[in-house]
Image (cartoon, rainbow, N blue to C red; front, side, top):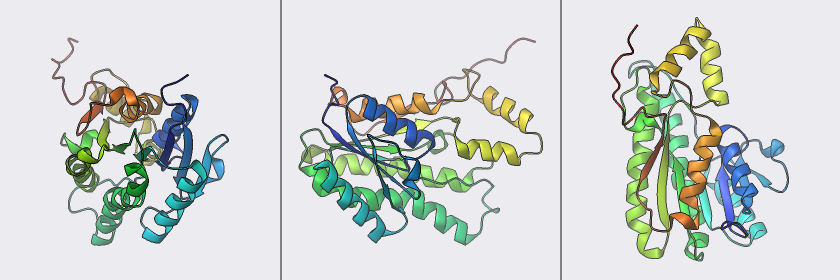
Length: 251
């Protein structure tokens, strides 16, 4: 029996990218999985899909309540839903700042707030937030996105402190640039997509982009009972980008 057999997991933004890889891995390891997404039509059995907009509190509360009722509770919450933004501090208008912060930061607040009563009733309660390397490293053309993920990092630590005595662990993962539909769209918009991809690959010491499945594996570990003594950490899944400082390769 898998150590996650019978655990009940809720994954936001779970219809594609990192969220989908995470939901599928949790299900493969024996968890009963509910996916919250704007469009859950692609969610396959045995997972359950629920339509929800993390920027709308009533939508979140209704979806979380329905998922908890169908699953019989919630043990694991993966706050993965998020949106991106490109540009310097002067390139995004106020409306876009409000939108990204509303989804990436307040989306976590809304979903966690709705799930907390169920997590408090669990013997294996865990929350994992999808953060980013952008929270801990200065990346060009990512001012708004970085600000939102910096807030997610700080929020993770505060939540971990608030809920540790309730038996609820809270951690986050910090992916490097990852093969996701959003990154594919950014590359498609570049003047030279091939050169831009090569630059992104080279930025990470391992020389390639992170895969969604690699991030999912880190999420699954932090969410599992195997990580029962781990709370308040940010686990980098970034090909060494945060911690390594390599000398230039000899030509």
